[in-house]
Amino acid sequence: MRRLLFFMMLLPISLMAQKITVEEYIETYKDIAMREMRDHKIPASITLAQGIIESGAGNSALAREAKNHFGIKCHKEWKGKTYTMDDDEKNECFRVYKNAEESFRDHSEFLTSRPRYADLFKLDIMDYRSWANGLKAAGYATNPAYATMLINRIELNKLYLYDQLAMGKINENEAEQQIESEEENTDEDIELELAYSPADKSAYELVDMTADKRFIYENNGVRFLYAKEGETPESLSKELRIRKRQLCQFNLVQRPDEMVFHYGDVVYLEKLRNNNRKVKKYVADGNESVRDIALRFAVQPERIVKMNKLEKGKSLKAGQKIRLR
Image 1: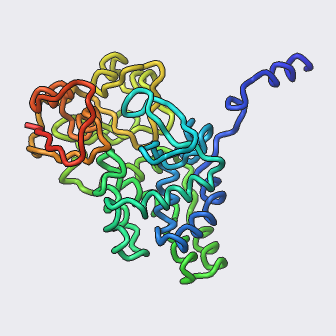
Image 2: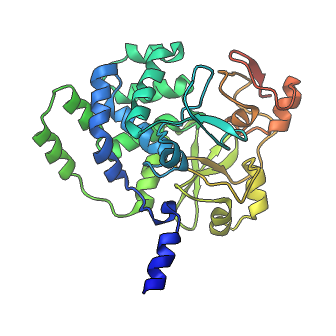
Image 3: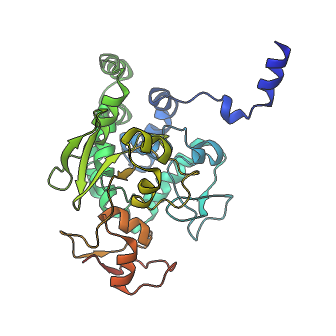
């Protein structure tokens, strides 16, 4: 017994820490999100949904170690501590916060201080759907289904109730009654599929289903599915019966043994195309790499580099026009 206790003491804290559930995440941070809504006019539902998706409900390494819940990178103006990890590119710089509350506040200031997000604040603060689509249009994330993920997460967990509560449209008792009335769904796979199913069927057509009842969609004629939090090339290759090497090639994974997919990541099941059938040109927003654009439009990065005569490793500029066919 003593040997077991001694062994447990030697284990890293991260291995012993229990995973936070989505419900626990909401309960922990709902008051902060509602306060930010009153102070900065950003819907609490949007803030909570982004926190859940960007941090894996507080379980990602970035959230645990850097207290960064929104995936905000350093940018030129950041003077605080930094955290380096591989994301879209190798060794990218992310902001480090003293605590999660500081991360929530910086997220609000990030949105309110940047011109690209100015149009969001012209929207109805209670209209979380328009806010979700606005964030995607402004380029907050490169995931093509980002707006849908936000909307479905908000509706799945009734996060819109915190908008109503923050603005005094309902009281705490009314909010609690509506939350408690929600039927608990114990089937995680069903919940995940609800959260990932794109609303725009014309853009991402549902084409098939795996043996494990996971939906398969098409982007530019390339089949893909949405990852669950914590999946790896190894686990997906076994589940989908695709060679790990091929799966990594399809998804431009450079370090397979270190790669962990996050909630809602697009995972392609086929080779990316030489060009995009629907989109001829794309205007870069300055925060994207060639790899980002390749995965977004399902076009091979080498072809994008060749078509646009780009220098390998050179960052794209905001407003730069990128040919996709």
